[in-house]
Amino acid sequence: MPFNFKFLAAIAGLSIVAANALEESSSDPCSAIADKKWVAPKNVRACYLSIEVDPTLKSNMLDVITKTLAFHTSVNYQIQAPAPFATDVHEDILADLAKYRTKKYKSDYDLHIELSRALKRFNDGHSAFVNYLPTPLALLTAPDGTQDVHIAPEAFTVASTEFADEIQFWQDALPGKLKGQLASLSGAKVLLINGRPPFDAVNANAAIAGSYQALGTRQNGFFSSYSLTATGWTYLLGNFAQQALPLDDYAVLTIQRLNHTVPDTIPLPYRSRIGSIKAFTNRSTYLANNCAAVPGTNGFDYYASNASSIASESSVSPVAKHQQQPPIPASVVRKHPINIILDASPLTDVVLPPVLAPSLIPVTGSRAAAQFYVLKDGKTGVLALGSFSDVDYETFLNGLLAGLISLKSKGATQLIVDVTNNGGGFVCAAHWLHRIIAGPKSTTVPQAGLDTEARDGPLAQLIAKQIVNGNVTDPDLNLLYNPLQWNNGNNEQFAADDDWLQPPVEKIINGRQDAFSQRYTAILGNKQKSSKKQLVDLVKNANRVGSPMALRRLPSSTHRKL
Image 1 (tube, one colour):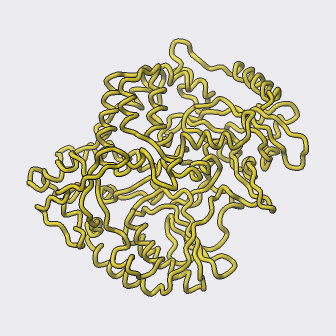
Image 2 (image 1 turned 45 degrees about the vertical axis):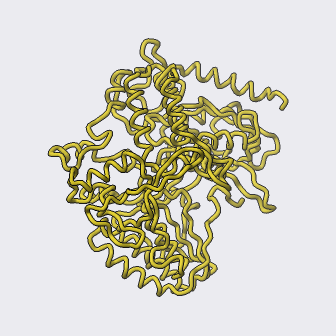
């Protein structure tokens, strides 16, 4: 590619801006960003890079992570995923962790980045400072079907609302006649990102973001999108305009603005905004207030005499910040097993602009992160499902059933299930919804695939054996490996003394020895006392839905029409 002199000039100009705004303490760079809401990313990096790796903490952290992975089903499968994801997903996390033990790191920040990319492909939801740009991107589809990367048409509306206290910085950073004209960038076609075709940046981001999902999903994460939570529709800026860590100081965009024929090359500086962390004044107080372990960091004994005090100190678990259902009461939160996707961009409270929000009235059955609509054609029903979690399991299922029945009663004959940015939740609810939509068949009655297997490693076997032998008491069924939590393959509940993880089923997965349990079934009744009877009633009522609706997944929200 020919050298881009505009690109060079943009970088030079940005360097001058950065030099004029230099905020750094040579003795303790963390003091330079203390008590500031907005700072230059380079100053945040300087703070992070000044923190040395503590060998003891590093060893402890790697020990905990490695032991925890013994319970994850996907560890060995992710070494090389099967088709059609064979080229998309490959991560030998155990081999990487072993490598990190002996590798020397210049700073704790370098170690953090490497761990994040290996464990979650940079899905990091707890950053102290987050990088932002006022120009989220979107992949727009023209009338002829071609697709191009654009600055999102709603970019300035979103940025001026979310970054009202910093928007002037970006207005002033624009070059020449564009200074103060940030709104004119909205909708512009993006020709180059940092001097290269836009999808070079899209694919570079996909290599380090999006967990272990398919390539297309990870590419989509680069663009702006939306999410449905219990409190309503929110706007997601995407990984270009929102970085979990201070990775970049700027982006240089070559764009063609609306109603213009001559391209503009524009340097845009990232700005780092402080997140939800405790106040600090320097490096030592930053570490002490935000990085030290607390009593509940690695869990605690629910039956210990001091459990209530520890639970109070750890009232908000890290994963709870990412759940999309209403807050779960502390008295029953332990009964809510969850599966949450932590995205590379921490959750925001940016409200979806009205022009992008659904204008249709939700039908009966809509609640929290599950909303039902009938499109104007009168025959297409839509289930916008932002989460498979809810405060109450049976209420959630009843709402889904009521919504589907309501769509049918209003004439819907086909169904779109929009799970864009769905944060996960009850796996059983996903299976149950599939059974309701597919209708009663030999493959869906009685359980629609609710029988499964558990990873059966040495530690899991030991825990189950201790419970079965009476060495560990669990009167409230808090322990996942209690046999009373499960049914066998014949849908019969295990007895209290059944060692349900024996005998393990030995397997070789991607060349590595592994073990799984016999087939079993989760007992939903242990989540709520009345669960079994209500579920039976739900399945009976579900037969009233009649013939199954056509099911298809809504295309990604980043593929919009111009």
